[in-house]
Length: 467
Image (tube, rainbow, N blue to C red):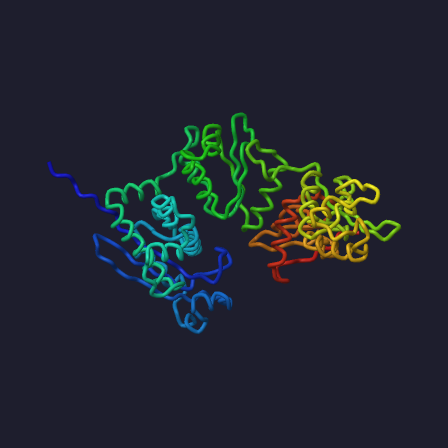
């Protein structure tokens, strides 16, 4: 009896170059595709005019300059031809979420729904070569001796993926590689109580999703720039991840809230977790024991760290704060590490009890310069302590009052590092900016501190509180 030979579906090995990493802000500058069908390879590539500036670091990395793309078609002009090149093929890319996400967002902007079957070669490499520590493209080049024609150009990198596929086929054979491909691209196994139609209603856009257990009890709150893909990923992992198995067994309903972008999703997720206390969110739960170190000078001119607890803490207003910790224990552990790394005196810092005419323990093991014995002046110790703590300084609020951060159609209102809410019109903006103080949240502070450093002045609107 003849057996039917195993064949692969048509595979499109895809790579793109872009002006940056944000779907909503950045644009595609080049697409390269190598299509494999029954051992025949077809090639398609094109530069695209992104219609925005290409940053200098991206130009250096890719070699694609504004002059190279200024006379090229933009995405809308090539969209239908590109869609034809990818239609009814398995979309193969390295770290496929990036390439697929960019293309999907670009198609969506011109009204085309792009939903191919996706194979990520990072996941395929992890599946087939679990002993490897890394699976980035440079590692695959080195490990599998792939031939580089044009690194960080779309077609050159797409060719590397095709070479990697050929290496896998030669090493494992057609049957095993097809099985691996099917496992990596397997459709999500939805929980019993979740209807596929509900999943299809979840938008493939930024926002926050909420999993509910019985009686509408919040089970888990998450965020993503592509909510539908992220929700499905929970169920794709549930056969091997204990947390995902538990989540899949308990979930009874799903809700979601769209945001205009990634920042809005981050802020809303953190806020909702504190408000609704879902049982399976641990990291972003509210902390009632928030504290920070503050340097105080005694009558002898010695600077000593004093712990400021939650009741007296005013982050954003107090100049002399260091750290921000979830608990006293975490604060003590951090100060101990800082003292050890910088040869600071445990007695002066209050980490050890002072014994008359005896050095601190750190001095005995040569980890203190002798401030406890007078071998180091207090002025020198004070200076070194301030320098060591400077990296942990809590940044003061740099604005006179509340601000609004523009993101798409939303304006996120922030005051003294506290998130007051998001507005879509002037009335909502006025209401939020006049609401008064919100409770400081360490997770939101970390999100905003990182984000504000990357924003332009045009994205920030200063708001004035009504007198």
